[in-house]
Length: 121
Image (cartoon, rainbow, N blue to C red; front, side, top):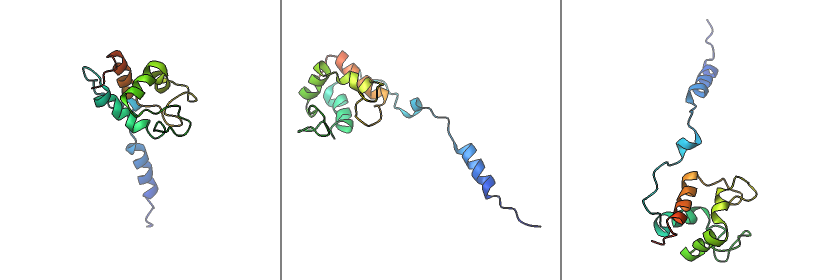
């Protein structure tokens, strides 16, 4: 009796049962925001991890201003539409430019920072 090649069957089973039904929301940290959001503790890490590659001093890749300091970021929220840019669904307007939209929990942190009074620390 000839031995049949069972590897294709194993491959199909791995594909079928190895997949997950995790949604994007399952992959995003859903922790609650702190009682008061501050620049130093909450917003600055978001800016440093997502914006500084272009919003440095001097700005690069067409960025209009640096986002290196508390005053830079506060100005961007108050007068330059930073929250609208990171919240946008329009890919031509969205920041970070050319990248994926920030996870909603990070956008919510910046929105809460503004609502809490743009506290520094």
